[in-house]
Image (cartoon, rainbow, N blue to C red):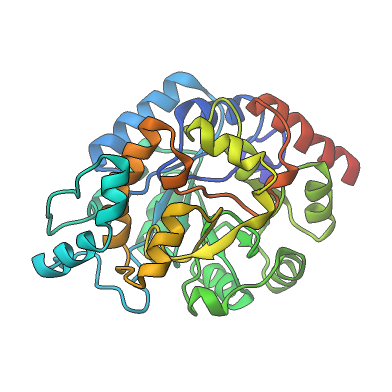
Length: 352
Protein backbone atom coordinates (compact mmCIF):
# COMPACT_ATOMS: atom_id res chain seq x y z
CA UNK A 1 0.00 0.00 0.00
CA UNK A 2 2.76 2.44 0.94
CA UNK A 3 4.46 1.91 -2.41
CA UNK A 4 1.23 2.12 -4.41
CA UNK A 5 0.39 5.47 -2.85
CA UNK A 6 3.92 6.82 -3.04
CA UNK A 7 4.16 7.39 0.72
CA UNK A 8 7.50 7.99 2.38
CA UNK A 9 5.96 7.02 5.71
CA UNK A 10 3.03 4.70 6.57
CA UNK A 11 1.11 7.49 8.29
CA UNK A 12 -2.46 8.42 7.33
CA UNK A 13 -4.20 11.57 8.50
CA UNK A 14 -7.63 10.76 9.89
CA UNK A 15 -10.39 12.39 7.82
CA UNK A 16 -12.34 14.92 9.86
CA UNK A 17 -15.93 15.38 8.73
CA UNK A 18 -16.55 19.08 9.32
CA UNK A 19 -13.09 19.78 10.73
CA UNK A 20 -10.82 19.05 7.76
CA UNK A 21 -8.45 21.79 6.65
CA UNK A 22 -6.52 22.19 3.42
CA UNK A 23 -3.55 23.41 5.46
CA UNK A 24 -3.38 20.23 7.56
CA UNK A 25 -4.09 17.82 4.71
CA UNK A 26 -1.40 19.41 2.55
CA UNK A 27 1.09 19.50 5.44
CA UNK A 28 0.76 15.77 6.09
CA UNK A 29 1.07 14.98 2.37
CA UNK A 30 4.14 17.19 2.07
CA UNK A 31 5.70 15.44 5.08
CA UNK A 32 5.41 12.05 3.36
CA UNK A 33 2.12 10.74 4.75
CA UNK A 34 -1.34 10.35 3.22
CA UNK A 35 -3.23 13.59 3.71
CA UNK A 36 -6.95 12.87 4.12
CA UNK A 37 -9.81 15.35 3.72
CA UNK A 38 -13.35 14.64 4.94
CA UNK A 39 -16.10 15.67 2.53
CA UNK A 40 -19.10 15.13 4.82
CA UNK A 41 -21.87 17.52 3.79
CA UNK A 42 -19.95 18.94 0.82
CA UNK A 43 -21.76 19.72 -2.42
CA UNK A 44 -20.26 18.54 -5.70
CA UNK A 45 -19.08 22.08 -6.49
CA UNK A 46 -17.43 22.44 -3.10
CA UNK A 47 -15.69 19.09 -3.56
CA UNK A 48 -14.26 20.25 -6.88
CA UNK A 49 -13.11 23.55 -5.38
CA UNK A 50 -11.49 21.77 -2.42
CA UNK A 51 -9.73 19.26 -4.66
CA UNK A 52 -8.40 22.08 -6.83
CA UNK A 53 -7.12 23.93 -3.77
CA UNK A 54 -5.42 20.79 -2.45
CA UNK A 55 -3.79 20.24 -5.83
CA UNK A 56 -2.41 23.78 -5.74
CA UNK A 57 -1.04 23.28 -2.24
CA UNK A 58 0.66 19.90 -2.59
CA UNK A 59 1.77 17.32 -5.12
CA UNK A 60 1.76 14.68 -2.38
CA UNK A 61 -0.80 11.87 -2.09
CA UNK A 62 -4.30 12.84 -0.95
CA UNK A 63 -7.30 10.75 0.15
CA UNK A 64 -10.82 12.14 -0.12
CA UNK A 65 -13.29 10.69 2.36
CA UNK A 66 -17.04 10.18 1.90
CA UNK A 67 -19.84 8.92 4.13
CA UNK A 68 -21.88 6.20 2.44
CA UNK A 69 -25.67 6.68 2.62
CA UNK A 70 -26.07 3.95 5.24
CA UNK A 71 -29.22 4.15 7.36
CA UNK A 72 -28.92 3.20 11.01
CA UNK A 73 -31.59 2.02 13.48
CA UNK A 74 -34.27 4.67 13.93
CA UNK A 75 -32.98 6.78 11.03
CA UNK A 76 -34.90 7.77 7.91
CA UNK A 77 -33.46 7.08 4.45
CA UNK A 78 -31.16 10.02 3.73
CA UNK A 79 -33.01 11.04 0.58
CA UNK A 80 -36.40 11.00 2.30
CA UNK A 81 -37.78 14.43 3.33
CA UNK A 82 -38.03 15.32 7.02
CA UNK A 83 -41.52 16.52 7.94
CA UNK A 84 -41.87 20.04 9.33
CA UNK A 85 -43.32 19.03 12.69
CA UNK A 86 -40.47 16.61 13.44
CA UNK A 87 -37.99 19.33 12.48
CA UNK A 88 -39.64 21.97 14.69
CA UNK A 89 -39.96 19.63 17.68
CA UNK A 90 -36.29 18.63 17.47
CA UNK A 91 -35.23 22.29 17.19
CA UNK A 92 -37.38 23.22 20.19
CA UNK A 93 -35.56 20.62 22.29
CA UNK A 94 -32.33 22.59 21.66
CA UNK A 95 -33.84 26.02 22.40
CA UNK A 96 -31.73 26.76 25.48
CA UNK A 97 -28.49 25.95 23.64
CA UNK A 98 -29.41 28.26 20.75
CA UNK A 99 -30.03 31.03 23.27
CA UNK A 100 -26.72 30.44 25.04
CA UNK A 101 -24.83 30.55 21.74
CA UNK A 102 -26.72 33.58 20.44
CA UNK A 103 -27.86 31.52 17.46
CA UNK A 104 -31.12 30.74 15.71
CA UNK A 105 -32.33 27.30 14.63
CA UNK A 106 -31.55 26.65 10.97
CA UNK A 107 -34.47 27.17 8.59
CA UNK A 108 -36.52 24.10 7.75
CA UNK A 109 -35.21 22.11 4.82
CA UNK A 110 -36.54 18.87 3.41
CA UNK A 111 -33.14 17.83 2.08
CA UNK A 112 -30.51 17.70 4.82
CA UNK A 113 -27.47 16.38 2.92
CA UNK A 114 -26.18 16.57 -0.67
CA UNK A 115 -26.93 13.59 -2.88
CA UNK A 116 -24.25 10.94 -2.46
CA UNK A 117 -24.21 10.22 -6.19
CA UNK A 118 -23.23 13.84 -6.91
CA UNK A 119 -20.55 13.77 -4.22
CA UNK A 120 -18.91 10.57 -5.42
CA UNK A 121 -18.93 11.71 -9.06
CA UNK A 122 -17.07 14.89 -8.10
CA UNK A 123 -14.65 12.94 -5.90
CA UNK A 124 -13.89 10.48 -8.70
CA UNK A 125 -13.36 13.33 -11.15
CA UNK A 126 -10.80 14.82 -8.77
CA UNK A 127 -8.67 11.67 -9.12
CA UNK A 128 -7.14 11.64 -5.64
CA UNK A 129 -4.59 8.99 -4.76
CA UNK A 130 -7.26 7.30 -2.64
CA UNK A 131 -10.97 7.42 -1.90
CA UNK A 132 -11.91 6.34 1.61
CA UNK A 133 -15.40 5.47 2.80
CA UNK A 134 -17.11 5.07 6.16
CA UNK A 135 -20.42 3.46 7.14
CA UNK A 136 -20.46 0.54 4.80
CA UNK A 137 -19.13 -1.18 1.70
CA UNK A 138 -18.88 1.08 -1.36
CA UNK A 139 -20.97 -0.16 -4.30
CA UNK A 140 -19.15 -2.32 -6.85
CA UNK A 141 -19.61 0.24 -9.61
CA UNK A 142 -17.91 2.92 -7.51
CA UNK A 143 -14.98 0.64 -6.67
CA UNK A 144 -14.62 -0.20 -10.35
CA UNK A 145 -14.81 3.44 -11.38
CA UNK A 146 -12.12 4.31 -8.86
CA UNK A 147 -9.85 1.51 -10.04
CA UNK A 148 -10.30 2.56 -13.67
CA UNK A 149 -8.93 5.96 -12.65
CA UNK A 150 -6.03 4.48 -10.68
CA UNK A 151 -7.60 5.45 -7.35
CA UNK A 152 -7.01 3.18 -4.35
CA UNK A 153 -10.20 2.43 -2.33
CA UNK A 154 -10.14 2.31 1.48
CA UNK A 155 -12.97 1.14 3.76
CA UNK A 156 -13.42 1.32 7.54
CA UNK A 157 -14.27 -1.61 9.82
CA UNK A 158 -15.01 -1.83 13.53
CA UNK A 159 -15.33 -5.63 13.60
CA UNK A 160 -13.88 -8.62 11.78
CA UNK A 161 -17.15 -9.36 9.93
CA UNK A 162 -17.16 -5.78 8.63
CA UNK A 163 -13.56 -6.18 7.44
CA UNK A 164 -14.51 -9.38 5.61
CA UNK A 165 -17.46 -7.62 3.97
CA UNK A 166 -15.19 -4.81 2.81
CA UNK A 167 -12.65 -7.24 1.38
CA UNK A 168 -15.41 -9.08 -0.47
CA UNK A 169 -16.52 -5.70 -1.83
CA UNK A 170 -13.16 -5.15 -3.49
CA UNK A 171 -11.54 -2.46 -1.35
CA UNK A 172 -7.76 -2.16 -1.50
CA UNK A 173 -7.12 -1.47 2.19
CA UNK A 174 -9.10 -1.52 5.43
CA UNK A 175 -8.95 0.84 8.38
CA UNK A 176 -9.39 -1.25 11.54
CA UNK A 177 -10.96 1.33 13.84
CA UNK A 178 -10.72 0.47 17.53
CA UNK A 179 -13.29 1.88 19.91
CA UNK A 180 -10.62 4.26 21.25
CA UNK A 181 -10.88 6.37 18.09
CA UNK A 182 -12.21 9.93 18.02
CA UNK A 183 -15.40 10.99 16.32
CA UNK A 184 -18.05 8.77 14.79
CA UNK A 185 -18.02 5.00 15.06
CA UNK A 186 -18.36 3.83 11.43
CA UNK A 187 -20.04 0.52 12.32
CA UNK A 188 -22.47 -0.80 9.72
CA UNK A 189 -23.29 -4.49 10.29
CA UNK A 190 -24.36 -4.19 13.92
CA UNK A 191 -25.24 -1.13 16.02
CA UNK A 192 -22.21 0.82 17.17
CA UNK A 193 -22.93 -0.15 20.79
CA UNK A 194 -22.41 -3.80 19.83
CA UNK A 195 -19.24 -3.13 17.82
CA UNK A 196 -16.95 -1.73 20.51
CA UNK A 197 -13.79 -3.75 19.98
CA UNK A 198 -10.55 -2.21 21.23
CA UNK A 199 -7.66 -1.77 18.83
CA UNK A 200 -5.35 -4.18 20.63
CA UNK A 201 -7.83 -6.98 19.93
CA UNK A 202 -9.24 -5.75 16.62
CA UNK A 203 -6.08 -5.01 14.63
CA UNK A 204 -4.42 -8.47 14.73
CA UNK A 205 -7.76 -10.22 14.18
CA UNK A 206 -8.48 -8.15 11.08
CA UNK A 207 -4.90 -8.70 9.87
CA UNK A 208 -5.40 -12.46 10.23
CA UNK A 209 -8.82 -12.41 8.57
CA UNK A 210 -8.13 -10.47 5.37
CA UNK A 211 -5.50 -10.43 2.65
CA UNK A 212 -5.57 -6.69 1.95
CA UNK A 213 -3.43 -4.17 3.85
CA UNK A 214 -4.75 -3.06 7.25
CA UNK A 215 -4.47 0.49 8.57
CA UNK A 216 -4.66 0.68 12.36
CA UNK A 217 -6.74 3.45 13.95
CA UNK A 218 -7.82 4.38 17.45
CA UNK A 219 -5.77 5.68 20.37
CA UNK A 220 -2.55 6.11 18.34
CA UNK A 221 -0.92 9.46 19.10
CA UNK A 222 2.81 8.87 19.59
CA UNK A 223 5.71 6.65 18.53
CA UNK A 224 4.72 3.90 20.97
CA UNK A 225 1.27 3.53 19.43
CA UNK A 226 2.74 3.41 15.94
CA UNK A 227 5.28 0.74 16.87
CA UNK A 228 2.60 -1.32 18.63
CA UNK A 229 0.18 -1.13 15.68
CA UNK A 230 2.87 -2.18 13.21
CA UNK A 231 3.93 -5.02 15.52
CA UNK A 232 0.31 -6.23 15.48
CA UNK A 233 0.52 -6.58 11.70
CA UNK A 234 -0.87 -3.29 10.41
CA UNK A 235 0.88 -1.85 7.36
CA UNK A 236 0.07 1.74 8.30
CA UNK A 237 -1.56 3.80 11.04
CA UNK A 238 -4.28 6.41 10.87
CA UNK A 239 -3.96 9.27 13.36
CA UNK A 240 -6.58 11.91 14.00
CA UNK A 241 -6.55 13.55 17.43
CA UNK A 242 -2.84 14.37 17.57
CA UNK A 243 -3.13 16.20 14.24
CA UNK A 244 -6.39 17.88 15.28
CA UNK A 245 -4.46 19.65 18.04
CA UNK A 246 -1.94 21.25 15.66
CA UNK A 247 -1.85 24.83 14.42
CA UNK A 248 -2.77 23.71 10.88
CA UNK A 249 -6.02 22.19 12.16
CA UNK A 250 -9.44 23.74 11.51
CA UNK A 251 -10.47 23.07 15.12
CA UNK A 252 -11.08 26.19 17.26
CA UNK A 253 -8.30 27.06 19.72
CA UNK A 254 -10.36 25.88 22.68
CA UNK A 255 -10.88 22.49 21.04
CA UNK A 256 -7.13 22.13 20.52
CA UNK A 257 -6.51 23.20 24.13
CA UNK A 258 -9.06 20.65 25.33
CA UNK A 259 -7.10 17.86 23.66
CA UNK A 260 -4.08 18.83 25.73
CA UNK A 261 -6.06 19.43 28.95
CA UNK A 262 -6.14 17.33 32.09
CA UNK A 263 -9.71 16.33 31.19
CA UNK A 264 -8.71 14.71 27.88
CA UNK A 265 -8.79 11.21 29.40
CA UNK A 266 -12.54 11.53 30.15
CA UNK A 267 -13.93 10.99 26.63
CA UNK A 268 -17.33 9.37 26.15
CA UNK A 269 -19.39 7.91 23.32
CA UNK A 270 -22.54 9.95 22.75
CA UNK A 271 -25.28 10.60 20.20
CA UNK A 272 -25.99 14.04 21.61
CA UNK A 273 -24.36 16.18 18.94
CA UNK A 274 -25.08 14.34 15.70
CA UNK A 275 -27.57 11.57 16.39
CA UNK A 276 -24.89 8.93 15.80
CA UNK A 277 -22.48 7.39 18.27
CA UNK A 278 -19.26 9.44 18.41
CA UNK A 279 -16.36 9.84 20.85
CA UNK A 280 -15.50 13.18 22.34
CA UNK A 281 -15.12 15.13 25.55
CA UNK A 282 -18.39 15.61 27.45
CA UNK A 283 -19.23 19.28 27.94
CA UNK A 284 -22.20 21.46 28.79
CA UNK A 285 -23.92 20.95 25.42
CA UNK A 286 -23.58 17.16 25.59
CA UNK A 287 -24.97 17.06 29.12
CA UNK A 288 -27.94 19.30 28.29
CA UNK A 289 -28.89 17.21 25.25
CA UNK A 290 -28.48 13.88 27.03
CA UNK A 291 -30.49 15.05 30.04
CA UNK A 292 -33.29 16.24 27.74
CA UNK A 293 -33.67 12.69 26.41
CA UNK A 294 -34.71 14.23 23.08
CA UNK A 295 -32.02 13.31 20.56
CA UNK A 296 -33.22 13.41 16.96
CA UNK A 297 -31.91 10.79 14.51
CA UNK A 298 -28.96 11.51 12.23
CA UNK A 299 -28.65 13.66 10.16
CA UNK A 300 -31.38 15.89 11.65
CA UNK A 301 -29.67 16.18 15.03
CA UNK A 302 -26.37 17.06 13.34
CA UNK A 303 -28.00 19.77 11.22
CA UNK A 304 -29.80 21.31 14.21
CA UNK A 305 -26.86 21.30 16.62
CA UNK A 306 -24.69 22.65 13.80
CA UNK A 307 -26.31 26.08 14.14
CA UNK A 308 -25.19 26.63 17.73
CA UNK A 309 -21.88 24.81 17.17
CA UNK A 310 -20.95 27.23 14.36
CA UNK A 311 -21.75 30.19 16.62
CA UNK A 312 -19.72 28.58 19.40
CA UNK A 313 -16.76 28.06 17.06
CA UNK A 314 -16.84 31.72 16.05
CA UNK A 315 -16.83 32.71 19.72
CA UNK A 316 -14.41 29.88 20.63
CA UNK A 317 -16.71 28.53 23.35
CA UNK A 318 -15.72 24.93 24.17
CA UNK A 319 -18.84 24.37 26.29
CA UNK A 320 -20.98 24.37 23.13
CA UNK A 321 -18.65 22.62 20.64
CA UNK A 322 -18.36 19.01 19.53
CA UNK A 323 -15.03 18.30 21.22
CA UNK A 324 -14.17 15.18 19.23
CA UNK A 325 -11.06 13.39 20.49
CA UNK A 326 -9.91 9.82 21.03
CA UNK A 327 -8.82 8.00 24.16
CA UNK A 328 -5.18 8.72 23.30
CA UNK A 329 -5.72 12.50 23.38
CA UNK A 330 -3.53 12.99 26.43
CA UNK A 331 -0.63 11.47 24.48
CA UNK A 332 -0.77 14.11 21.74
CA UNK A 333 2.49 16.00 21.28
CA UNK A 334 3.63 18.60 18.78
CA UNK A 335 2.35 22.06 17.94
CA UNK A 336 2.62 21.56 14.18
CA UNK A 337 1.83 18.80 11.72
CA UNK A 338 5.56 18.41 11.01
CA UNK A 339 6.27 17.85 14.70
CA UNK A 340 3.51 15.25 15.00
CA UNK A 341 4.79 13.50 11.88
CA UNK A 342 8.31 13.39 13.30
CA UNK A 343 7.04 11.77 16.49
CA UNK A 344 5.00 9.17 14.60
CA UNK A 345 7.80 8.38 12.13
CA UNK A 346 10.06 7.68 15.11
CA UNK A 347 7.66 4.82 15.94
CA UNK A 348 8.11 3.38 12.45
CA UNK A 349 11.87 3.38 12.99
CA UNK A 350 11.41 1.72 16.40
CA UNK A 351 9.37 -1.10 14.86
CA UNK A 352 11.98 -1.71 12.18
